[in-house]
Image (cartoon, rainbow over all chains, first blue to last red; front, side, top):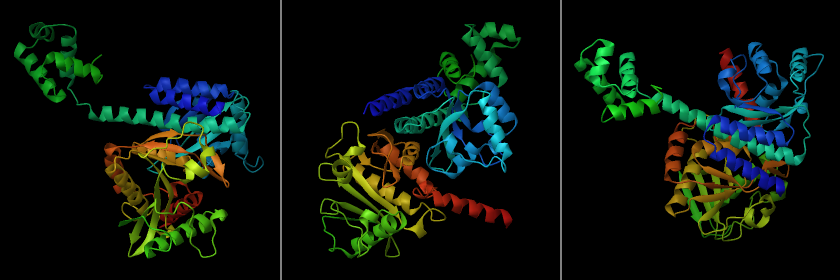
Length: 241
Length: 218
């Protein structure tokens, strides 16, 4: 009962988080409660495809992350292999491989221990598009109690879901952001700095009418009423800082 | 095509009899829920009474998909038999219904069927509920469904932790949805290639990879 309530509370915290780092902290906190120091979540690409764009969120040891990506270890990692082939969560120790026949798989698992990743738990996840995703938790030891497994299973579902939702919302924002010309951005930056149109004209060595045209065009692209509105909108869309 | 049958008892409706046989072929023969096995090949339980709303997907006159809905204010599977799956207050209300026995005929899963029988059943259930002001349902699916429903826009609240019934992983959940979720589900499901149920069946992985391998050779 206590584990259930604890898990529900953590899920609520994940759900109400609004930034990737807030989600990361919540997942990290829960993993730590079960003795696991780090986690990674994302999608599993087809074999021999680059892995990195598929990662949504992680706090993996950076040196290991880099070595793993640089050497395309996802293609030989027995944990990834098992993630592709099962629907049920599993402890890393269950991702069996034959040391003799599969020395590469053994190599990855051994190298991971240099970064204090000796044990872990992986939750494969599937989404509506049939994308294969998952979350994996790692650490020095994993005492795979039924409670820990259940809690981590749910945290993985909700943590991955939230990380994915945030990533998708960002993608939409980027796609929906109108394109301003370099000159329009420059003019809006001077507007944001409090300059009048004639002052900006003097700075950029053009006529005031040209400045007015740039602002009018930026307003049209951003669907704004006036220069103040356009400055605010451009800042929100991170076109100017 | 979706057909709704309610207010009847087993034996009273020929289409419903077909649905019971479909349920038997999937839940007993395919998924191995031996407790439900019956010599007459009809899977029927105590919840197939007049309170049940049976949703049937028909194709060429044959029942190819099925789904059952029951009000939580009447006896039902999760609230009365599997209540041990729940570890927080159980939402028993006239406006909360239970969804059970969702299934699609083996030959009609996934693949080329535009929209898919599974999507049709899901959309019909959502429409039926929303028309009656019902925005919450309880069910006990494989935990993998949570991610699926969340991507459709459902607010999925776990009522317990993942556990197992007869060796199959399940979790009790309450799901909230509204018109916007219906619109989004429709949009997503009309172009839906994988059948909802297939996404969670290990054997379909083998099927898909075989198909891919075949495609690679040709």
